[in-house]
Length: 130
Image 1 (spheres, rainbow, N blue to C red):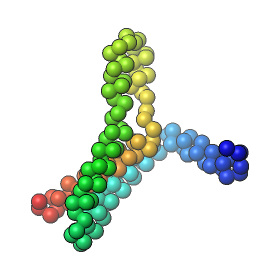
Image 2: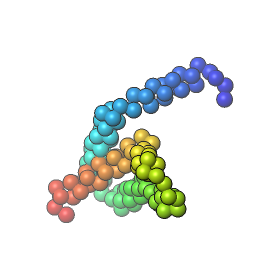
Image 3: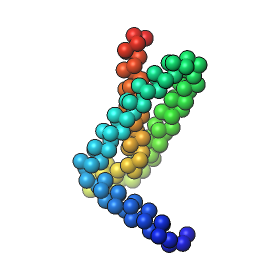
Image 4: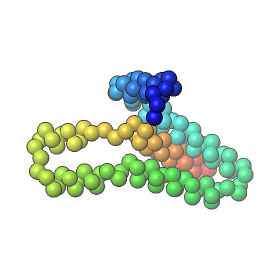
């Protein structure tokens, strides 16, 4: 790709955002915001589909598919890391480095959104008494 002004601007913004997110407090604030947005989306989705009363089953299938997709993205590497740990004897420093590896921010935010969505759905179910 050519090095245009737009590409340069997008690269700079991406680098600045990744540096901004390195601060643990900022990262945690984004995760909490994602959790709250998920809870809000659950409430909005339930009230909207409750009014139409024809999209309940379709939306339930879409929600389950979304949750399973996010679970697959979040936990697909766990089995691979456990296999690597069992195959090779590592020093304590290498073991601690493996536990410190972070997943990308977007996967963490998607998982937080999923948790907020599930919390909101359970909260709405308790409100309705079902």
